[in-house]
Every structure is written in C-alpha cells, then in structure tokens.
Image (cartoon, rainbow, N blue to C red; front, side, top):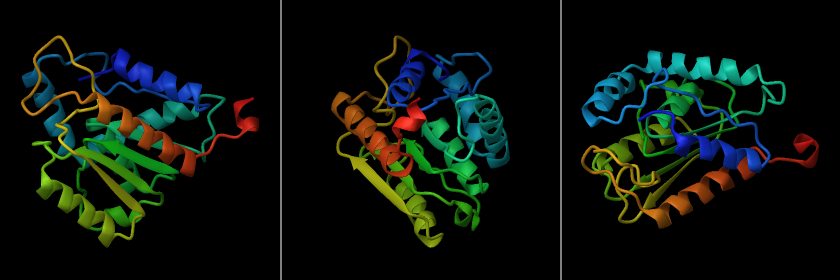
Length: 205
C-alpha cells in the first residue's frame, strides 16, 4: 500500500539488531489505501520484471550512499510487492547475501533464477488466495530447477498479508492479520539474516 509506520517500524527493528536498514517507497510518496488504486498500481508492476528491477536498483543506489552501509553485505527483505523486488534483484544477478520474501512467491522469466547467488527464504499463508498452492509450486519448482538454496515456510490458516496489522480502510479480499504467524515470520526473517548476514561487534561500532 505504501510506506507507512508499519514499514518504518520494521526498519527500526532491523536497526536495533545492528543493521543499516532502508525502507524504500514504491509509490512516490503516495499511500494507496483504496484497494482498486493499489491493484491498478501493483499488478502492472508485478508483470514487468524490468520495471521492478529498476525500482530495486534505485533503492540500492540510495542505500549504498549511506556511509555505514557495506556494499558487499546487503540483503533484500520484502513483504508483498517489496518481496517481488528482492527476488527480481536476485534474478538480475545482484550480489546479495540473502533474499527474504513474505506473501510474494512471484516467478521469473525462464532460467533467470540461476543468477540468484544467495539463499532465498519465502513465507506464505496456507489460505492465501493471492498466492495459492499452484503459485507456491511454480515458485519452488523454479528455485529448485535453478539450484537455488531455498526454503519455504507455509503458515497454517493464514491469509495474504498476514504479517500486516489491521488498517482503517478497505482491503482486497483474502487479506487478514494473524498476529501469531506475523511474529513467527519475523523471527524467521531475523534467523535468515543471522545466518547469512551476521552482525559482529566491530560492525556495530
């Protein structure tokens, strides 16, 4: 929907763990609280890998200007469309240490997943109608065929965007907050980073 306090709190939580975190804005300062407007913006994005990659590279360019950021120690973590950005950066051959995606099991163009050079962790709700079993199977088949080090966590009973606290405006059908699984998915993301991008005391300084 856009950059809100939810995303900012995620960046703050990563910073508290010792990471330099960038929560980037997909929509040019707009918050798309109207479901139809959000779909009209995001569906074309998701069907245009080159455009998504351009957005991701722009975010990376900003992150790399931060003096505390290590250009060769970057991970991409995303929820929904942001997760698709992380995956497309991997398929574009960007040197990432890890990719984590929640609610975005998008598949790429044939063969391009072979360019992913880092572990990929994905999380999805078992009852997510936007990322149904057929999409999960297509995603995992792509990762497996490309020889990617991948993991998929399926959270039982969860809908799409189960990580996002309730909002005070309409949402698309099939969306619902699941606080227990939201916490579990966050722990899984943190574990991914701890494995692939550990923070040492000298990096905290």
